Image (spheres, helix red, strand yellow):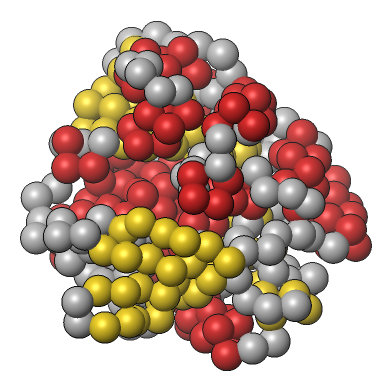
Length: 326
């Protein structure tokens, strides 16, 4: 896509998780968009100029070819072992009047043992500086156990981010996986979570209290997103509010993933991720947020708004994000 510029050489980001074909049903008919939360995050990071590798599973079919071409056009590299699934997973989305999507899924998630072993060997050699995962891949077996093993095995030199991005229609009763989510939160340096996720995970609980509690138990930074009401970043000693950018909404598909990719990208650019855990710990040691953190949060809010103005998960390039901010 035009407008993508390569950032200064920095740490490679390894994203682990599902890539799916989003089949979007609306009054105008059915559209097919490449999707899947981790794949969307990888796409967004690549469009913002970062080096990205995606470990996923795709079938040798038309949907798989579409997703490979889509990711490749942005510069995302598929990790070894990403091909060879029986079929490419799909998510059928139905849009309401406000462009919000509800999903039904046909997803099978697993990772070949050889791919995980290869990543583990690379990790020891510091081939990548940041690991991101989330959504279905972190919770749906049999692949979720291998995702958890990769996160647990991340050395101090590799920072970790996690986005629960829950799919209740696929995952079912939250009591079955609440402990797994909490375990991944505790293992991460950065967590982004929506108020919808927390309402599903902890019915009746106050989302702000949950996010602040998470920040006190592991991650250096927890960011709670609330759609048009903006976002709140929490760390042990403080919080920071970020307003949502006003925009005419086409649909909300991929908006949270665009927020995640721009947040991770901004923190990488600001030197707070990708070079060990100490930088983000220092940046969140006081009551006031440092400038690099504020810039990353504001960039994330703009990226989400930009994506809401377009159909499907279509995050901005560097040039588009700069123009949107202006």
